[in-house]
Length: 199
Image (cartoon, rainbow, N blue to C red; front, side, top):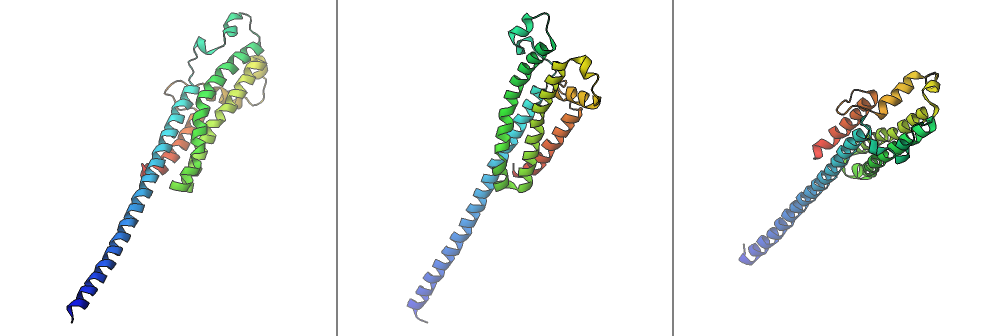
Protein backbone atom coordinates (compact mmCIF):
# COMPACT_ATOMS: atom_id res chain seq x y z
CA UNK A 1 0.00 0.00 0.00
CA UNK A 2 1.41 3.34 -0.91
CA UNK A 3 1.45 6.14 1.62
CA UNK A 4 0.10 8.64 -0.92
CA UNK A 5 -2.95 6.49 -1.60
CA UNK A 6 -3.57 5.95 2.12
CA UNK A 7 -3.36 9.70 2.73
CA UNK A 8 -5.78 10.36 -0.14
CA UNK A 9 -8.16 7.74 1.24
CA UNK A 10 -7.94 9.24 4.73
CA UNK A 11 -8.60 12.72 3.34
CA UNK A 12 -11.57 11.42 1.33
CA UNK A 13 -12.97 9.58 4.35
CA UNK A 14 -12.42 12.71 6.45
CA UNK A 15 -14.36 14.77 3.90
CA UNK A 16 -17.18 12.24 3.88
CA UNK A 17 -17.25 12.13 7.69
CA UNK A 18 -17.30 15.94 7.80
CA UNK A 19 -20.21 16.03 5.35
CA UNK A 20 -22.13 13.44 7.40
CA UNK A 21 -21.49 15.31 10.65
CA UNK A 22 -22.50 18.59 8.99
CA UNK A 23 -25.73 16.95 7.73
CA UNK A 24 -26.52 15.61 11.20
CA UNK A 25 -25.80 19.02 12.73
CA UNK A 26 -27.98 20.74 10.13
CA UNK A 27 -30.89 18.38 10.84
CA UNK A 28 -30.45 18.88 14.59
CA UNK A 29 -30.42 22.66 14.07
CA UNK A 30 -33.59 22.45 11.93
CA UNK A 31 -35.31 20.34 14.58
CA UNK A 32 -34.27 22.82 17.25
CA UNK A 33 -35.53 25.77 15.19
CA UNK A 34 -38.78 23.94 14.45
CA UNK A 35 -39.17 23.20 18.16
CA UNK A 36 -38.37 26.81 19.03
CA UNK A 37 -40.92 28.06 16.49
CA UNK A 38 -43.55 25.70 17.87
CA UNK A 39 -42.76 26.75 21.43
CA UNK A 40 -43.01 30.45 20.53
CA UNK A 41 -46.29 29.90 18.67
CA UNK A 42 -47.75 27.88 21.55
CA UNK A 43 -46.63 30.49 24.08
CA UNK A 44 -48.21 33.28 22.02
CA UNK A 45 -51.45 31.33 21.66
CA UNK A 46 -51.49 30.45 25.38
CA UNK A 47 -51.04 34.12 26.30
CA UNK A 48 -53.77 35.25 23.87
CA UNK A 49 -56.16 32.58 25.18
CA UNK A 50 -55.50 33.55 28.78
CA UNK A 51 -56.02 37.26 28.05
CA UNK A 52 -59.25 36.43 26.24
CA UNK A 53 -60.36 34.42 29.25
CA UNK A 54 -59.63 37.26 31.69
CA UNK A 55 -61.48 39.80 29.55
CA UNK A 56 -64.34 37.37 28.93
CA UNK A 57 -65.11 37.33 32.64
CA UNK A 58 -64.40 41.06 33.07
CA UNK A 59 -66.97 41.83 30.36
CA UNK A 60 -69.52 39.70 32.18
CA UNK A 61 -68.82 40.99 35.69
CA UNK A 62 -72.14 41.57 37.43
CA UNK A 63 -70.80 44.60 39.30
CA UNK A 64 -71.58 47.66 37.21
CA UNK A 65 -70.12 51.02 38.14
CA UNK A 66 -72.19 54.16 37.75
CA UNK A 67 -69.38 55.57 35.62
CA UNK A 68 -69.92 52.83 33.05
CA UNK A 69 -73.25 54.37 32.04
CA UNK A 70 -73.58 57.55 29.96
CA UNK A 71 -74.19 60.77 31.89
CA UNK A 72 -77.67 61.14 30.36
CA UNK A 73 -78.67 57.81 31.89
CA UNK A 74 -78.26 59.15 35.44
CA UNK A 75 -79.68 62.57 34.61
CA UNK A 76 -83.05 61.09 33.69
CA UNK A 77 -85.03 60.00 36.74
CA UNK A 78 -88.00 58.89 34.60
CA UNK A 79 -86.26 56.51 32.23
CA UNK A 80 -88.32 54.70 29.60
CA UNK A 81 -87.59 51.15 28.52
CA UNK A 82 -85.76 52.62 25.54
CA UNK A 83 -83.65 54.85 27.84
CA UNK A 84 -82.85 51.77 29.90
CA UNK A 85 -81.87 49.84 26.77
CA UNK A 86 -79.70 52.70 25.54
CA UNK A 87 -77.87 52.89 28.87
CA UNK A 88 -77.17 49.17 28.91
CA UNK A 89 -76.19 49.21 25.23
CA UNK A 90 -73.54 51.79 26.12
CA UNK A 91 -72.19 49.63 28.95
CA UNK A 92 -72.21 46.43 26.94
CA UNK A 93 -70.57 48.09 23.92
CA UNK A 94 -67.69 49.37 26.02
CA UNK A 95 -67.24 46.03 27.72
CA UNK A 96 -67.42 44.24 24.38
CA UNK A 97 -64.82 46.56 22.86
CA UNK A 98 -62.32 45.47 25.52
CA UNK A 99 -63.03 41.79 24.93
CA UNK A 100 -63.50 41.91 21.17
CA UNK A 101 -59.91 42.94 20.44
CA UNK A 102 -58.64 39.90 22.33
CA UNK A 103 -61.03 37.55 20.57
CA UNK A 104 -59.91 38.96 17.22
CA UNK A 105 -56.24 38.45 18.14
CA UNK A 106 -56.99 34.90 19.23
CA UNK A 107 -58.85 34.16 16.00
CA UNK A 108 -56.01 35.53 13.86
CA UNK A 109 -53.60 33.08 15.50
CA UNK A 110 -55.52 30.20 13.97
CA UNK A 111 -53.27 30.06 10.88
CA UNK A 112 -50.16 29.95 13.05
CA UNK A 113 -51.67 27.21 15.18
CA UNK A 114 -52.51 25.14 12.12
CA UNK A 115 -49.16 25.69 10.40
CA UNK A 116 -46.87 25.14 13.39
CA UNK A 117 -48.80 23.03 15.89
CA UNK A 118 -51.71 21.01 14.48
CA UNK A 119 -55.05 21.27 12.72
CA UNK A 120 -56.70 20.15 15.97
CA UNK A 121 -55.08 23.08 17.76
CA UNK A 122 -56.33 25.49 15.10
CA UNK A 123 -59.84 24.03 15.40
CA UNK A 124 -59.78 24.30 19.21
CA UNK A 125 -58.56 27.88 19.00
CA UNK A 126 -61.36 28.81 16.61
CA UNK A 127 -63.86 27.06 18.90
CA UNK A 128 -62.75 29.19 21.85
CA UNK A 129 -62.93 32.38 19.79
CA UNK A 130 -66.42 31.50 18.52
CA UNK A 131 -67.63 30.72 22.03
CA UNK A 132 -66.33 34.08 23.24
CA UNK A 133 -67.98 35.89 20.32
CA UNK A 134 -71.37 34.54 21.41
CA UNK A 135 -71.29 37.12 24.20
CA UNK A 136 -71.94 39.84 21.62
CA UNK A 137 -75.25 38.14 20.77
CA UNK A 138 -76.14 37.67 24.43
CA UNK A 139 -75.53 41.39 24.99
CA UNK A 140 -77.82 42.23 22.06
CA UNK A 141 -80.55 39.92 23.37
CA UNK A 142 -80.30 41.44 26.85
CA UNK A 143 -80.58 44.96 25.42
CA UNK A 144 -83.74 43.86 23.62
CA UNK A 145 -85.13 42.58 26.94
CA UNK A 146 -84.51 46.00 28.48
CA UNK A 147 -86.04 47.73 25.42
CA UNK A 148 -89.36 45.89 25.57
CA UNK A 149 -89.52 45.87 29.37
CA UNK A 150 -90.12 43.17 31.96
CA UNK A 151 -93.88 42.88 31.36
CA UNK A 152 -93.39 41.91 27.70
CA UNK A 153 -90.40 39.70 28.47
CA UNK A 154 -92.45 37.77 31.04
CA UNK A 155 -94.89 36.87 28.25
CA UNK A 156 -92.25 35.42 25.93
CA UNK A 157 -92.69 31.69 25.41
CA UNK A 158 -89.03 30.69 25.88
CA UNK A 159 -88.36 31.76 29.46
CA UNK A 160 -85.39 29.38 29.64
CA UNK A 161 -83.71 31.44 26.94
CA UNK A 162 -84.58 34.68 28.75
CA UNK A 163 -82.86 33.32 31.85
CA UNK A 164 -79.94 31.97 29.81
CA UNK A 165 -79.35 35.46 28.39
CA UNK A 166 -79.47 37.04 31.85
CA UNK A 167 -77.09 34.45 33.26
CA UNK A 168 -74.73 34.82 30.31
CA UNK A 169 -74.24 38.58 30.45
CA UNK A 170 -73.68 38.94 34.19
CA UNK A 171 -71.76 36.59 36.46
CA UNK A 172 -70.47 36.97 39.98
CA UNK A 173 -66.66 37.26 39.88
CA UNK A 174 -65.11 33.83 40.37
CA UNK A 175 -68.37 31.96 39.70
CA UNK A 176 -68.07 29.87 36.56
CA UNK A 177 -71.03 27.56 37.12
CA UNK A 178 -73.50 29.07 34.63
CA UNK A 179 -73.90 27.12 31.36
CA UNK A 180 -72.11 29.73 29.22
CA UNK A 181 -69.09 29.80 31.53
CA UNK A 182 -68.98 25.99 31.59
CA UNK A 183 -69.05 25.87 27.77
CA UNK A 184 -66.32 28.51 27.54
CA UNK A 185 -64.13 26.70 30.08
CA UNK A 186 -64.51 23.43 28.15
CA UNK A 187 -63.29 25.17 24.98
CA UNK A 188 -60.43 26.79 26.90
CA UNK A 189 -59.38 23.46 28.45
CA UNK A 190 -59.46 21.72 25.04
CA UNK A 191 -57.12 24.32 23.57
CA UNK A 192 -54.85 24.26 26.61
CA UNK A 193 -54.46 20.46 26.41
CA UNK A 194 -53.31 20.76 22.80
CA UNK A 195 -50.80 23.58 23.30
CA UNK A 196 -49.33 22.54 26.68
CA UNK A 197 -46.95 19.95 25.15
CA UNK A 198 -45.33 22.75 23.10
CA UNK A 199 -45.00 25.32 25.89
